[in-house]
Length: 226
Image (tube, rainbow, N blue to C red):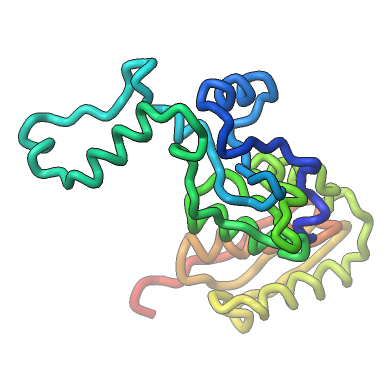
């Protein structure tokens, strides 16, 4: 699946001149935790989130350091903290470095971007304009809506062939030491593995094959040193 298949659109956005208070009210009213920032031409210029509004002078949550740490902190950092805590407009608190993707970006890549950059949302941009947004919640919704593969009717031979092919593709799998039997959708896994993690990985591989009803694990851990 690609970004265009699951992205939320149209996107709730704010402008650089939106006040911090207005942004906070928008988050509450629309039940969102962040919004892209676009200029008068509709071009993406930043993103503002709840995290940008956490440390504010109005709530008494602005950063406060001990006197000795205050002396060691660079003036630029202190000034930036002051701006973040006291600025009135979104332009002064938003993050200007925005991780984006295109409508054709795969969901695998979207998930990688979210995890690698430790962010909660990725704006989807086409031709410089924002056309959608994907959040972690969107990926969870997609997972929850996925068809139940276990409920699909598949022949025993097809299940066995699919599982063996899947195992052969995995660098951790020792297919020469593992055998698979299938009877009425019940998969029996036999053989030798080197660790409990490998045993678990084989089971997970079997669970992901359409048509599998249950799994009987007969795997044996290889004795240490053999």
